[in-house]
Image (cartoon, rainbow, N blue to C red; front, side, top):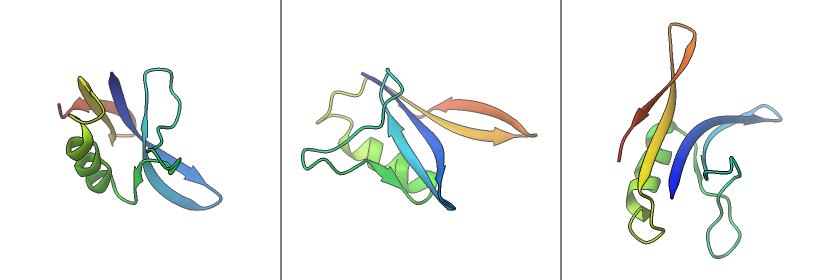
Length: 74
């Protein structure tokens, strides 16, 4: 499964969420959203659970020069 870590803002709070190939938020077995408060936290979470959840590719969003870009971390 390909996973993308994206910046998500809702009602003033900022988080980094894991999204699946269908651009839907991902959840754990207890229906808790998979996210980190920083991009580094979200990346660490994704790498930690990658084998258990069969992630084949993990990309993370970042902004450079006002442009949205992606880098592959796995």
